[in-house]
Amino acid sequence: MAQRLAGEPVVAVYASVALRARQTAEAIARSHGLEVIVRDGLQEVDVGDLEGRDDLRAIEEFLSVYRSWHAGNIDVPVPGGESGQQLLDRFLPVVDRIRAEHAERNGGVVVLVSHGAAIRLTAKTLASNVDSMFADAHIVPNAGAVVLELDDAGWQCLSWDRVAALPPGVQP
Image (cartoon, rainbow, N blue to C red; front, side, top):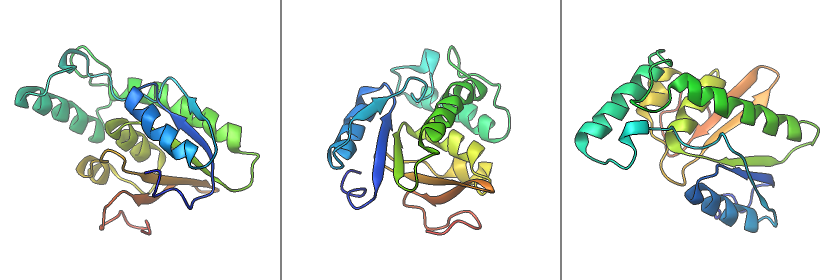
């Protein structure tokens, strides 16, 4: 990711509290002479009772809950964990603060390093041109990127990592 963003005018790099996110963010920030700003609230979905499990039943259980969020049932929690609404309630205010911190600056790219499921749900919620079916069907891989831009019409998705068939109105 640091190599992919090397030529971009990055002005700030934010990361979740998770070590793997901070490590990715550090590589990006270093290539731009910046420091990583760690923000609580950007972490991955709290999977509760499924934490540390990689068996098929746990994966299917998480995917069932996650798909229900994209179907509009964001109050359904992961067993012993958080709901989609709880994720958004902690994630979106951080995005709003980051946006506000950079609203006065002209230009530049702000990088937010987080985690796949949280990014997908947040991007779908923010971007008017990303629907639930698309976000549910397109996993964001490790070191993948979803590019959002805020303009007068609101948030728009400009690109979704490695996806050839983007939602209508999204240019690669």
